[in-house]
Length: 388
Length: 224
Image (cartoon, rainbow over all chains, first blue to last red; front, side, top):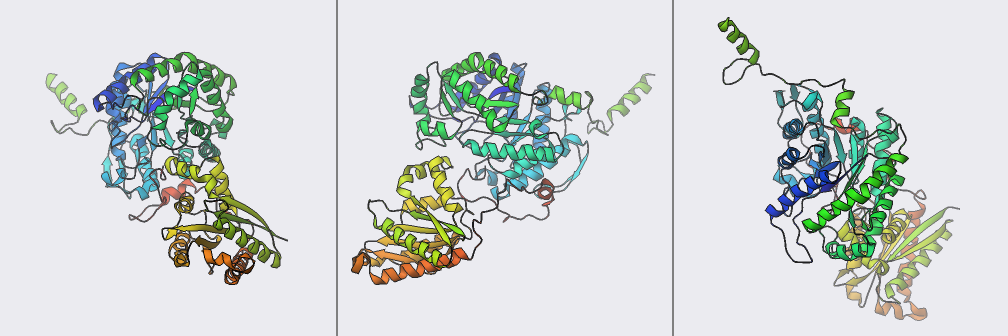
């Protein structure tokens, strides 16, 4: 099972000091957090994508490329990539290139985004959210699996003889998860393709997670990808830990009370009861997290949200230490002991290359380049003739 | 004998409240009307005052907490609804409106509803038709023709209730019972998780742009 963290990249005032970090500080803090995630032994780091204040992460591949260059083990993912408002051609190109640079440590999670105004900024309409997710992803898959694509759809200009470059590393596209809180069509989409399904599992009652995962598993089996309990499921989660649970509650409460989304509403205690939020000792986090399995079954990826609501970098790094030293090693052991042998691990680039029958170079060479007007092979043959 | 469930939503704030008093009168009359048509009835009453904080939380978090979810399930699962609000500033109270704001947009589709309101003066009586009726029309509920409005003076008649008010209560309850008995018992909205649209069908939805192919209504997180 994979363990990691995911961030929404918010720039939020620390309510205990009244200080708001600059974008520069937050961006560099997110680099420090990602590098620390690898250092403490986590498996995955994922970033959200947003195009409005108070968020900084408008360009995930720029950021993940920078992280990839400074890490060697960490799996890099998104939470989520906006399949609705991004051009699927650009997603195909950006993430294929990132996958080459990261030596196969990239996967993506597709989402529709929850900010209505974003759609018109990119020429779209939120009322088309589901049809956009369906059409754009269908095109993205073709761009990664077919060298030359002729395509026409509802939302984008047609493509004629288009080749998305670079071709996927080893000829195998990155693994894709689909994320949605409560739209059955997205669970259906993930099941149809045999892709992973991720539920953000924060800020919402577990019942949303439970019925989406149940639907995804049932339909995964229906579409013939394997048994329902072999479907690939990921969950989020939100935690704040201190050695003593009272200290955790006291320290986190001002951040909770003033947080974006749920601040100034329910009490920390109410929200902890109604959603998967766990504020307490490492042992409490371990017990609550193991309990997720009771309503989603054996699953493959667990990501925690630990850096939002204005928490200072120092505190976030302490949370990562606790996760790495006290929580994840226990969860790793306990989940592994519970998992039946026929339940697969989350796919990785290596496992997908193996499943595809091994690595192959997928390079598509141009028929002619615009500088010499000649194909690379042709130019070489002519040169050899001259030299001979 | 079919057993029908009646949900009663009362948005009164004081205790005792004239809103609850009117709700109780309407409930007794509706149960009697159902019995006279050969159906039994169970009644579940939701006092919105008890959910005031839950409702404010729901506005911020986007989901009902467990106590509020129980109240919502009571209302959406009922065969008929009696909805009673005090009139504040020429309209339903904010608490009353908030409850209906947090329901799923299709939750009351086709549901028989009896609308009623209380106020200190009869000058507010048209709020029933100018404010409540459009709200329930939007929700595609089926409101009975008679709305019941009770001002302070209506409670002063012989036996505690003015005879004209008593007549309106009888008539409205009879109209609600007619609608409820005319429907299959325990009719529930379709569960999209039980029977999802097959993906091939979602893929086939192509063709010219259809800007009005709409799903979600409401807040910023609804589409998520």
